[in-house]
Image (cartoon, rainbow, N blue to C red):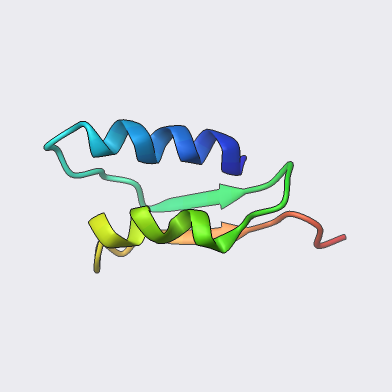
Length: 57
């Protein structure tokens, strides 16, 4: 969920290590794209695919 991803962003901000995520799939609640700004600021060109699956029914 986007809420869980916010927690991941906060935890990553406290770490020096780079992530090794290849894909993140969002679902369960609406994704506000503005909440991704800190993620993109720290993870430029990492190749992680972000997929929004909320509300596609």
